[in-house]
Length: 126
Image (tube, rainbow, N blue to C red):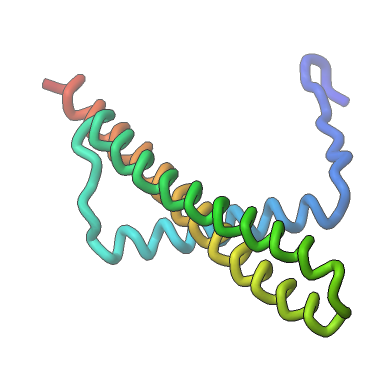
């Protein structure tokens, strides 16, 4: 080890590391799609906050649906496995939507951060 440098040891489990890498790649892909879709860019931090708040509202709605589906699964615990399996599939759909909403918000945050850097640099260069 060279003097002054500290080695970083990654102690995360392989699955956690894999999921983090995949989420980063997916966020990057969604971010590129947002740019290609030519959605409105954030002109300032206020617009950026508003866009992110709207995205967060979508996540909160998805979380509410997931919570309801989880509560319904608890009710199916009294039933047989076949009926519970159907509710687990409903819960899986809710979780998939929640993950999609979170990925979109992450990509939006990345794009807004870039927009703010560009507008901030333009302001400084004037």
